[in-house]
Length: 102
Image 1 (cartoon, rainbow, N blue to C red):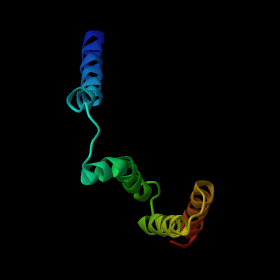
Image 2 (cartoon, rainbow, N blue to C red):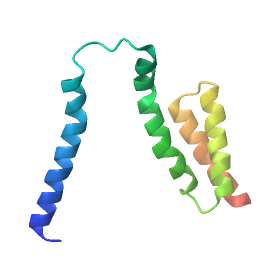
Image 3 (cartoon, one colour):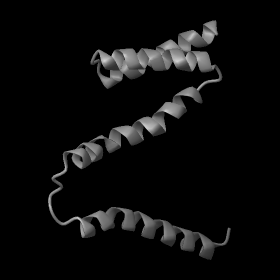
Image 4 (cartoon, one colour):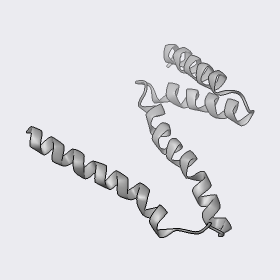
């Protein structure tokens, strides 16, 4: 790749990123009063995090069964309110142990 192409791609990427962040501030000048839209915007970060994380869970190991067991352990511990450290350690341990079995 030529250096000029790289900087062109970088400039386009920076422009798109800036527009995605700046357009809502320009178009929406008053407080959003819609309960639906507020709740939608509230849950966007969680949804994006789940969409990025969940597929990676099943490709982190060669065994899909071990990955499913680890995901199950993580979901159960999260549901019962355990801390992030406990959930991550327990699910990693579950995947490690299930790797020996499956």
